[in-house]
Length: 174
Image (tube, rainbow, N blue to C red; front, side, top):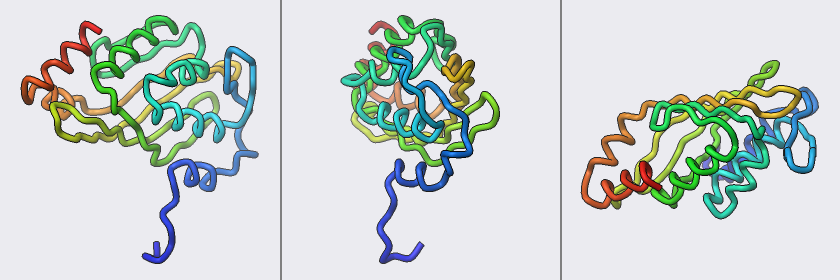
């Protein structure tokens, strides 16, 4: 990239890197039944991660009521939208500045792969880690999300100092 060219935002990259006409229709909002392209779903997913707890319902409107969330941290599996809501609220309470930047994505059949970098402040220090989400869709609705990342950097940060231990306590207790 030439130095005199502006850097594209995450959403601009997502939309320009994929021809949305080649992707199947998915449900963008399970409450209204609104449908769109996979590119539009990824754009909304990106926006949802970058507004935090204030717009949690926005993110939750994109997934099935019977969603299964899997991650390499506690709790390792969450079933259903209500438990997902509780887990997300705990996370945003403990790490209020948690954000994600989508680097790239791809879809194949009923699977969507999203590569991201997460950013947060833990124990007063910034931290970032690479992350991949694999989402499974059924009838166009996201029914499962499996998160892949190495939790060791996050765990190490949560034991760094008293401030980070308070964040860890909030993650576990809400």
